[in-house]
Image (spheres, rainbow, N blue to C red):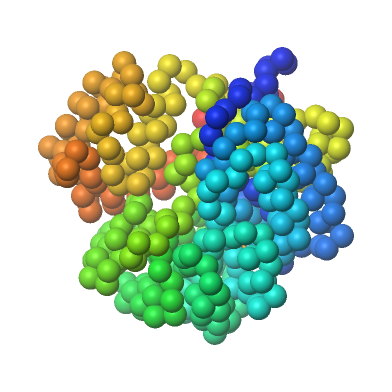
Length: 404
Ligand code: SF4
């Protein structure tokens, strides 16, 4: 149950945390996209920047000058407001002890020599490009307005741009997309220099206009058999081409640092719609840009909803993300789950018997079947829980209560 934070509650102090910065501007709002964003207008950026700086200060005052183990800048399209990103990251360096990598999402339509220089000025070391597909028909289905050669040039420029690693996002299970099409996209991304690949299916969140679009046009989403076939083909291609699996959907080549947005086990979020995972629960900022800015201008917290952790819930959350990594270090299980550890061990034994998990050197690893099962579970999680929460949070700036 998510509710507004009780009066008198304040975020607990933390020693170490990751940090997420949400930049809510997009040039074109893609119809399938569930994230908090508004159409880009340069006049909106200064007010956003002031509010993001104020929120950085607010977090530093409440959680303390913690070590920040990684920063993830997402959106929206962060490259549309790189000066704002640089300013906020400068404030993060002043108020916290930033010791980890800075990762950022980029859009093919916005990559230029100037953007790459701006990313280096921000101290970005890991960069991800939202290619989605090099196939014009697939780009059309998801409402992306750039031509494939724009994504090709952007990926080549980033790969030669001096970053520690470049990830390419590639979508699969799109209407009309064959397994050969998906593999061709992976091959092309790798040949252009991507050393990490994140593959993910189209989530048709009912509240996005792509859900409505596909429904109205009677476009059929690929069924489970096709999705399984494509998922298995992706795994096999990656294995054969030197890309090691690092998560349910992610693969990387060589010893490059891992690009990842979500598997940190504690983070604070800055920006409208940002979530934070604190030691005592989850909190979610208001999704409304104006309401977020206004509360920070008045020195108030923009947190709209909070779900406190019940006993061992934090440990189950740890286990969930280790599953997402596809590797569970068994030595960490007792510390993370405490009294619930025996229950988790029984559960893992049942998953092992079912062929979903295998033991490798002190870890429990998901098999390919297990990874596909988790992929389906995540799909279900995204479509039911996240959809319920985000639909309510988008409907009004300060919801009274959301049950998930
Ligand atoms: S998919 Fe990316 S570019 Fe498209 S609206 Fe969403 S955040 Fe913006």
